[in-house]
Length: 125
Image (cartoon, rainbow, N blue to C red; front, side, top):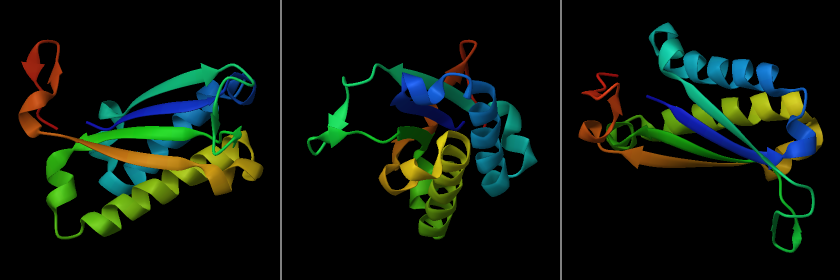
């Protein structure tokens, strides 16, 4: 179950939320396949201007991408993660502005298979 938490400036997100959620979902589906569409969860967190920085500069969007730990162990993990990161970065830059592309950070966080539950039951995807 891909879970994407996107941290970006509130001013960048305002009005772009539906488009960004749709594009991020498509980025995941492009890599995983159509079966994943209903499993993609996107959380947009808007940060106030001047309250978020990195390296003494205003920060660019950051994505925490929750992913099954088994994906990180696959022989093709580098390819899968590269494609996911590129798709997520493209979705953000296309929706919020190309000027953000160079600073977009995508961090993959692996969750063991038996640690994701939906509605109180173990998730199967």
